[in-house]
Amino acid sequence: MFIGIDTSNYTTSIAGIDVNGNIQIDNRKVLPVKKGQRGLRQSEAVFEHVRNIPNLTSCFDQFLDLKNCIDAIGVSVSPRPRKESYMPVFRVGYAVAKSFADVLQVPLYTFSHQEGHIRAALIGNEKLRNRLKTPYLAVHLSGGTSEIIKIDPFHHTSEIVGSTLDLNAGQLIDRIGVSMGYGFPAGKELENLAKTAKDFDIKIPSRLEGGNFHFSGQENYIHQLIDDGNNLCEIAHALFECIGRTIGRAINFICENHHIETVVFSGGVMANSIVKDTIQKRLKRQYCPIFAQAKFATDNGVGCAFLAKQSYEQAKAGMQ
Image (cartoon, rainbow, N blue to C red; front, side, top):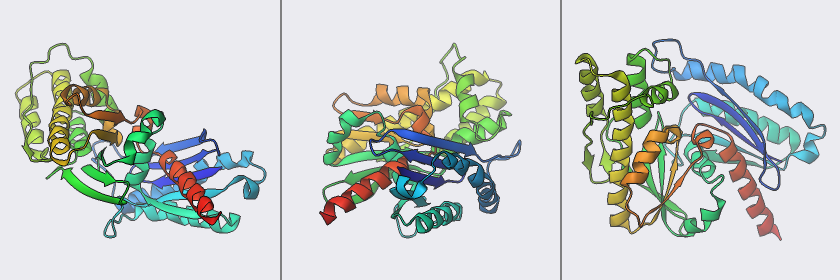
């Protein structure tokens, strides 16, 4: 079995997959945020992870012989795969993973939270994995990240080719949701509200600078719509449509300029059906989108488990 651990800013995750890639464990717990607040301090999130981990790892009591059951452990240790990328919350996951690996005497592989998201997006899309042997785009949309990355698997390089110039997409959603009286994170409740909309006359402008985009102006625009007494469900729908339209336009621009045909979409915002449908409508036909399943778009440890399996098998093959 291969274990994956992820302690992001808002979810504690423990996952396990078997040698055939079947998911055996997928335990997650969203960190609590007080009503009216728009997030957690790092110190608060670290404390919640420490509280959650023992409950999430209790599932291992079903494995009587862990030493012969666990082949490798994978853990996210940073937000992005860059030297300067750091957040204290990921130290909790690393501490647990390192302790497990040392006690069980199994390999420990470290990844970024972003890499875990991208790998999780491929679950259920295995038939399209051959498209990732050539350069492709990976879109990561969440509360902490809104980036479009060009990945070259042959040269093992990645480059940010598009990103938000102010707010992240998830930040915009949560700020509007909290202002409407919903809890944090507000994405699911706001989506349920948006799905009750019957009129779609509201259109929120989008702004791009090449492959980069803005969301702060949209926040001000939406607050004005609310102050003017517009229907909240229509505003919510227009918000998600705006995000999808913005990203779709950015993808079309980047794919054309970088001669890329395949795009992988991941991150919590991509669990939203309105955002996904809007992107699909906006993308030009020659581009192939790979969307994460909704349950694997949000924060999870499954991506790290699959990456651990991949790293272990590559290392084993190299020794033969």
